[in-house]
Length: 219
Image 1 (cartoon, helix red, strand yellow):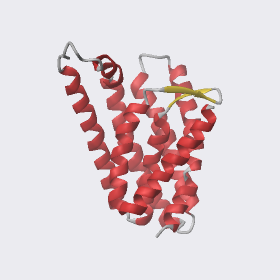
Image 2 (cartoon, rainbow, N blue to C red):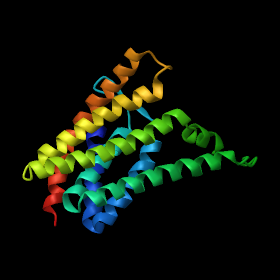
Image 3 (tube, rainbow, N blue to C red):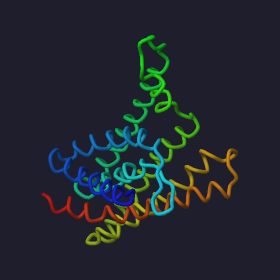
Image 4 (cartoon, rainbow, N blue to C red):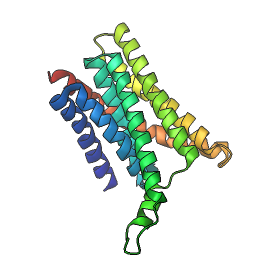
């Protein structure tokens, strides 16, 4: 069933990116990037098995940020795409700061959710810093590469979309896992985790191309 749910998750998530841009133009993309960044920080906590691979549910939301910035680059330009990344970073950091402040409060004797909130919102400073840093670097690199390829191959949307997204995803996975887990796990384990995640994200990245064409077609 997880394969079916995974497919539905991809279709629904990418469709929402296209829909919010259709309804609200570039402002909609800014909103989506904020939503995706916050929700990815929550859904990443849940691990599932798909096709024998263990992965987190944050992968699709993270991949949707690449689709969002590619749509922004395609329809509005590189400057607006970069602005979207800055907004998403601010949103992610705000989410982390507010949730950590929330955990500092001593709960009432009548409280029933503090334990669950601790489980959900407790973060590792090291992994969070590595995640936010690589999120910023990979998305900015994606914007740069997408627009570079757009100038060279102006008619090949599928090429610039897949090359920029897949390449930047691969770089992000390997660097993030190295920064977050070196000294904790053996390097062989880190490479294995990064490779597994990369395979899954390549499949997800290939699925976003039709949605980029759809967004381009919807004037």
